[in-house]
Image (cartoon, rainbow, N blue to C red; front, top):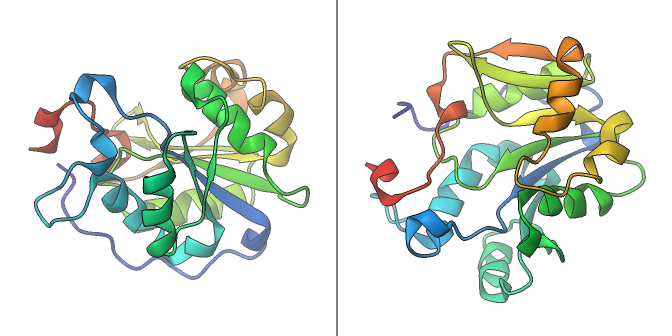
Length: 203
């Protein structure tokens, strides 16, 4: 797994205040066998809490997207200081959660970072590099050894198309269509491509 914990991020890029970080965490994970978001890692934290930790330097800009039945989880995140809201159509898949997330952004939002709630090994410095690049490019994707990773940045110009996402591919179709416009940020952080689908992924 990706090694270091989550180092402190560099100072925020100018203009970042009007950006939002959307963490898609409405799915329980059928292949995991139980609600993977609440699975405990070795240090006692849950998978979702660990996945949110690298975003701590930008905590005030994070919005965690949950499902309609996640009242208990919502309360727990609020106690930990993480803003969260419900994706009404989360049951239709990740694309629907993404659509709900973007549709609910404040009108002044200039862009958003899309992250997943089951990626606990991403480093804060990788996130900082994506955000820094997003101040200059409309589409930003981190890359590790040629593999596309998360989180991914989208300027507000892409919001209308993101709200049309309705299947489990999320923004993949948009990125495929706009491949020539993507600015890639190469990082030595395998955490950007490591998610948790089953229990074995935690070890």
